[in-house]
Image 1 (spheres, one colour):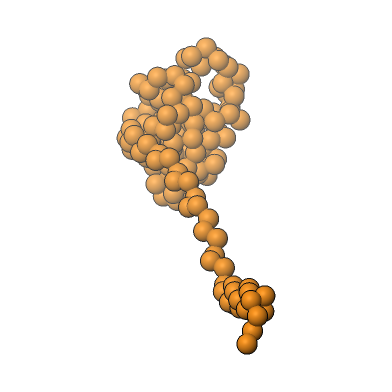
Image 2: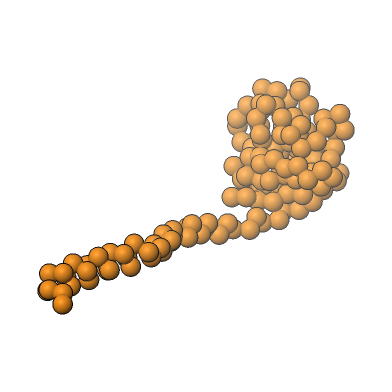
Length: 138
């Protein structure tokens, strides 16, 4: 017969052996936080875009700041100054976000006048006019 300490040691060894044979459960990481829903951009309109010629460089815009053809700014007839607008070239899908700081354009069919830098990001300046879609992003 086995004595009490021998039975106890055997039970402990058996328990350790069984515990050593189990596999640990995989650590479950929390799911990534959900991205906050983005507000859909407000469609403003579609039409043609042109760009300011270099002779406007340094002149005052309608909101009182000096025009800089290297900045990402634009002229729109009615949008409030400071409005940010996503301008998408409908031919190639390229887009740029500009800030309204001037009034215009006044040519028929034109919906927005872009700074030369903004225009070049979405189209070829040699064309002069491109079809665009406007969305308010603020």
